[in-house]
Image 1: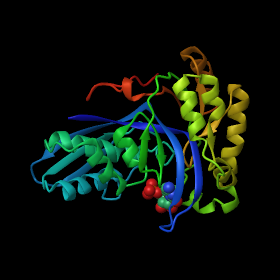
Image 2: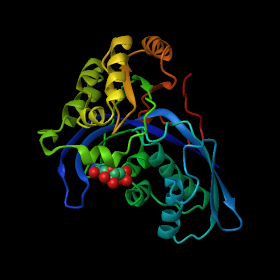
Image 3: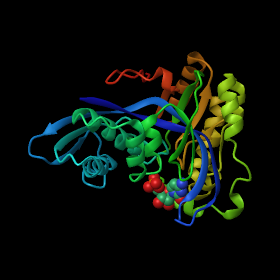
Length: 297
Ligand code: C5P
């Protein structure tokens, strides 16, 4: 059985304050893109949970969020069967694209099908919150405003088509370190999500691009000055605004057409190794279960 684990970008990310549990209160617009890991799940007659991946950058033991997800699924569903999980890793790791969370969400969805447990998306999303803040969104996909620590979701229905060129700087960023370095005076005074939701609903590409905002970007740029320098270079070469996703370091540009996105993609490939050309995956456009997404090139 095959399950796709789609990456996300943040169109907005506002931090409203620090919570008593040590996490931060966020308000953000998250958008699924068609860059995906491909997970294959097979019954393990021996009853074990095992992982295999085509990448050396991810742990294959119980630290991997896919492994955590299989254990959470077993504990919550009461089903005590084994599963062999193969991960074809396409999403950059520790990059602000929720790659690990997407894998965990794909395992929750996949085991629900493999073991015929009939859990609802709401139930799976609630289980996902125990795995990581971004997992509930990755269970649902599409576009949503996420609040709380990221697990409280309000779906955004829009039909906007936009192209995304991602640049992954060769730096590994810890989300905890970035949130830890955020100063109280950098907290947002007001969330940008209402404006972004209006722009998406109106299908106004220029307003969407102008409304992209991330309060963590200056923090990541301060901790990793090479990312700030690279963002400036990308902006110069691409000739359009450059944004950061999540806690980074992945940078992205939004483009209105495939042609303009391809031009930016090829220009950036001239000096960066890890560049990806993708596009928004609105919920209405999500492929059928097991279908292939259109990751280009
Ligand atoms: O939930 P997750 O394990 O993905 O979060 C990683 C780290 O990021 C947390 O340990 C916390 O330090 C920080 N974080 C936060 N506020 C959030 C989400 C994450 O402070 N809303």
